Image 1: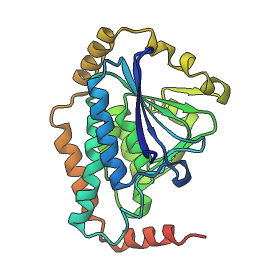
Image 2: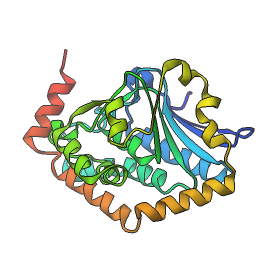
Image 3: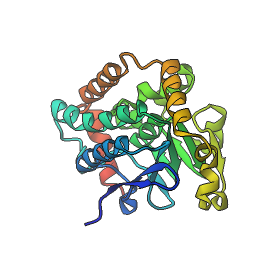
Length: 254
C-alpha cells in the first residue's frame, strides 16, 4: 500500500525528500500521516544528507492543513490537544533538523499547511500560488505551533497581523514580507536539479555549520515549550461555538 507520507534518500545527489502524497485530499494531514511524517524525519536524520526538502504531490496545493475527519469540531479540548501535538512534534523536528530544510511549495497552502511551510528554513513557491494563515477564520489560532515559528521567520508585527486577519496572500506579496524566498515559473519548477543547485553545490560540512549558526541566530532555547503553549491555547478554543460553527460550515459546503 502506498504511504501517504514518503521519504526518499537521493544518495548520488546527497539530499532527502519528504513528500505528502495525498493530492486527492489536498494533501491534508491525518493523525496517522503525522506519525508517519515523524518516522520519515527520523529516517532522514540517519542519512548523510546536505539538505532535506518537503513537498506535496500534485500541482494544486502543498498542504491544506489538518484532515477535518480527524480534527473535527466535536473533539473535546484534551482530545484536540493530543491530536494537535502530533504535528507540533513534526514541525519542531523540522525546525531543529541537522541541516537546512527547504519547502518546495508545489502549490498554495492554507492553515496548517502554512504552519508546516514555516517550519522549514527556506520556502520556494510557484507563480500564481496563494497562502493563508486562516485559522482565526475558523474560530481558533494556529494549532501546530506554527504561529510561534512564523514570528521567527518574518517580522513579528507582520506575523501577528497575518494571523489575526487571516489574509490569503499572493506568493509575490509574501516575497516582499520575507516569508517566500524565491518564486519560480512552471518550466523552472520541472528542472529540479537546477532549482536545487544552490544547495547541491555546498558540502555536508558547510550545511551542518550553516544550520547550526542559523539556529543560534533565531534562538531555539525554549522554542518547543512555546510551541506547546500555542497548541494548548488553540485546543482551549476547540469547543467554542465559533469553531464548531466554522467547521460545520466548511464540511457541509456545496
